[in-house]
Image (cartoon, rainbow, N blue to C red; front, side):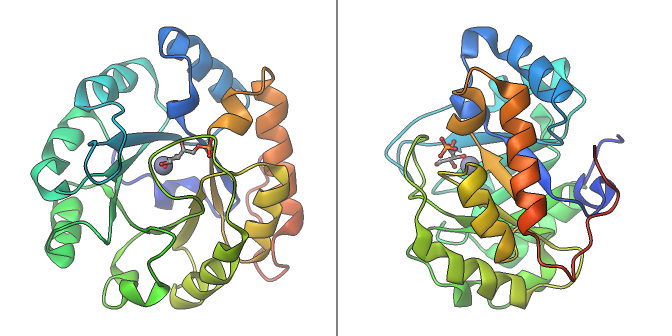
Amino acid sequence: MQRGNPWPQLGSDVLIAPSLLASDFARVGEQIDQLAAAGAEVLHLDIMDGHFVPNLSMGPPFVKSIRKYTELPLDVHLMLTDPATYIERFAEAGADSITFHVEADADHVRLIERLRELGLGTGVTLRPGTPAEALAGLAGAVDMVLVMTVEPGYGGQEFMENMLEKIAAVRGMLKAGQRVQVDGGINPRTAALCSAHGADVFVAGTDVLGSGDITGAVRALRQAARKARPADEPAVPPHE
Ligand code: DX5
Ligand code: ZN
């Protein structure tokens, strides 16, 4: 795959995006090899500033190391109060797509323009308490909307079923080809629920990397998401 905005290059089938937050950082290369062999299309990187969310995770040097290691597209989820100050640093580190929070303190329209100027995929995301209406004026301009299905900040939390209506509402705001991503508490059961409501990119940390069977977990997620997909959205090209 060529570098740059990955989303148009990834077809229209459901996509599995494991979150490296749940990886063993001392063995992350080996685990990326397993994820790639299992057919994961995208790697999801969770960036936390200890302010927007009460947790810290990784920064640009980690992204840079992963970029050197793998050809898989890097989908960077910025849980930052001030994303505008950092997007160039993550772009230089090798991000292919950057998602920022609509609750962040920034000129959202300008942020999207800058991501486009950098040639990156562009995503916007909503905390669970933020309504879909907060996307007004933005939804048409992004490649992807991420509907958080847990409160951002930590892996291993329980999926919030009351986000399903929001997933459907967001899907209704988007055109064909724009993606709806879900993140938090995703496993085959919850992926199926999200898929039935219009999600097509599935971030999963604990379910995939905490399972001891990366290959089986990726396959089970994909099968569940595909099976539940609304019939009017055919999955092409088939992945396996
Ligand atoms: C939470 C992160 C998620 C998290 C998902 O703030 O955005 O990507 O790693 O982890 P699981 O799949 O364990 O809920
Ligand atoms: Zn995330």
